[in-house]
Image (cartoon, rainbow, N blue to C red; front, top):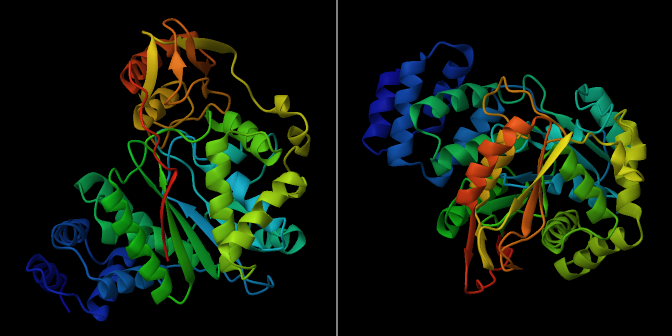
Length: 433
């Protein structure tokens, strides 16, 4: 088998066989296929696409390129969740405790962020002492003991994806639904859970900008999960507006505690209850309506907050932050960003808001960048709210006053104000299963 023949075949729009796909993934993993040939095939896939069978075979070959986590020592159905990202997306820190509080094990492998705010791991590491670098044995033991752990991805989990993503990033082949789906689902399948809930974001602050593209991605990933014999469901959620009021690592931990305490923002609470209900449904806890009630109860009775506290303690963090969020890192300086005119806020463009928070230190511009856990933005107003000229819209947090100017310049492009109140759009757009 020759790599050049596989490239030509896909360039002509023909279907690749399981053996050809496995040959490609094995070669990219062991280095026998050079980057220029791999890049050529990625571009052909980007332009010509892949059908459902090809995409499933690509995903399974990527899973087989490295280790998979064996969660069989943990009893019951294990449910995983993946979000395609977004501004202010702290759902894992809320969902995990809600679901685990009802006896459904959550063994979650999460990543770090590049751009915007940090990933779930960065957010949790803003809790003093919190350890995300767990061995497989430690990870499984914590889930066995308390039903919940969130750890960084192990070094040899889907190595093919690391190599392919690095190439896609520099060859303009990131925006391919088969390649995006295989990248996400290979890591989810290798993480070992029995069921997967996918939170597919759509809008200005998400990778998928249109509902049509989000639906295509969701359907492709659900088909992969089903083809791999995992219960899989996708929830398409709106990311044209930031989720919650906090953007930044310690700020988002604080807001997660507020939600789990029963007095967090309505939008993030609604999304988390919906996602938690789907996770519980896949775990066999009842129909969606019943599971929604169960999820709501974990907030009302304090069991979800208690579970979050248990996880922090089990992973060597200072669990006292649950009762005293002021123990979390905070920035030295704050700055009020004020409305430039009177009217209704018609939009706060999420991706520009994310860039503004990154410029304050809450995210990474490059892989080598250091995140400031206390930096970020607190929203005082959301789209649909009326503001007076000069009224504070948000508070910026940074450890250097010199960072505010560039962030404000970005926010001037993010906040839109007009005389007409914008129409409300639903947070939960669709459920694909």
